[in-house]
Amino acid sequence: MLKKILKNIIGKKNILKFKILYWSITGNYLTSKPLATKEEYLMRHKEYMQKIKNNNFVNNYFQKEEINFVNNLALKTQVTQKKSEINYFHGFIIIKSLKDFLKNNQEKVTIFETGTARGFSSIIMSFVLEKLRREYVIHTVDLIPHNRKILWNSISDIEYGRISRRDLLIDYSLYLKNTNFVCGTSVDTLNKLDINRIHFAFLDGSHDYEDVKFEFEFVNKKNKSGDIIILDDYTPKIFDGIVKLTNEIKEKNAYEVNIINNNEKRGYVILKKK
Image (cartoon, rainbow, N blue to C red):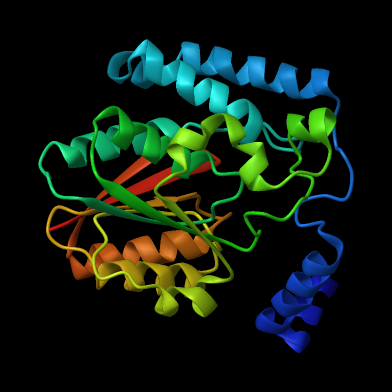
């Protein structure tokens, strides 16, 4: 209750400015110290891989090479120490959605993403495009600078200490050559980007209604019939901003709306422009 009162007094934008200043000074964007042992990260990874192994959607739609790629990448980029269980099912949602899109599109593909984090989803998209030998560029936006050495709350903290995202993903350099890493908030960076067309987008940055709506409208102005936008974390009572925006999109009827519920705490929205 006190946090909510202070937030209303200080203002959301000012709080974010203070956070960004603190992060830029300390480098503690995600954590100031390792949060788990190597064995704990490996155990969490093993537990979720078992769920993937038993998932009918994964078994029905994905090749062994794709499953192994997602699982291996996730150890560095998705397996974290937190109260909730890890979940990188969106990697498979992205692969299927992008492959389906590419069946009907032969031009050079421009992808836009918010919420780069450790680089999981942008590398997943690059993996698909490299495998299909397609021309592409990915623009991905996050508050964490690409070359800043930080702790990532991942197994890399135990193995290497503070490293940059570039070094975190050194084994995946092949999938970074056409990726433009943009540092900053969506509001501060999007209109400065020289992007005229967006074919495919994955929005997983701020989940506040105003922010995600701003990102959606940015993409909406730059896509055409058949293009895809994926909204992560469609979760009523947890991320109501995503839910509110989805309802508004439904009402305007400019997109086909497909809601996928992975579990009660994680859902996804796949939007296809009519």
